[in-house]
Image (cartoon, rainbow, N blue to C red; front, side):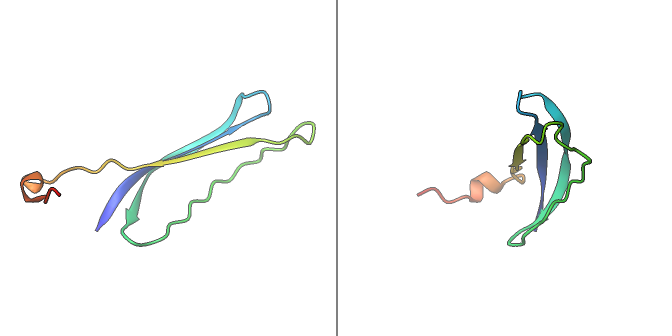
Amino acid sequence: MSADVDVKLVVKDPMGNVVYKNGGVNAMIANETRQFNFDSNLAPFWGGKYKVELSISYKRRLVSGELARTKMS
């Protein structure tokens, strides 16, 4: 079974300005590890640090009739 996950990567400079954005919808397979690689030519102007934010979201869609078969405990 596979699912589509929405991956978002945002890089901000020390002032909070977004300097790089990447991501998209990717297929994931159940019980498997997935590695995402994003390339950038960012180089801090003053040797400072960047802040990286990564989010991965998944919205499960119910198959018709699935709710009726779900056990509630």
